[in-house]
Length: 135
Image (tube, rainbow, N blue to C red; front, side, top):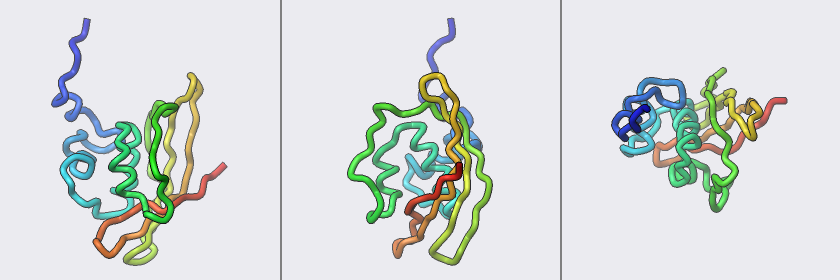
């Protein structure tokens, strides 16, 4: 029987976003307060926050005009992986990230293919605005 993993072991596992070990990747944004330098880094950290059900981080990195009042993870899918397809820097304050996130609900696999829009606010932080889904 395998022994349970310690929190330190879990942080050394690969980051859900597909990057390095969590501690060397998205933990810097989710747990250590660093500001994501690009819209792509923010999108990856938001995916990781969905996997870890970190509502405060998700709400904090969502543009005020489009963010929901709360997030409910009651029917949360099982996230399986992320593929970033494109990162387009429109100008200094606007960017788009196209990605495919794979997930499972009720034993069925699905894909979320989205082009997300981000803006950099006056405080230098990138925030998610909204996105367009692909069929």
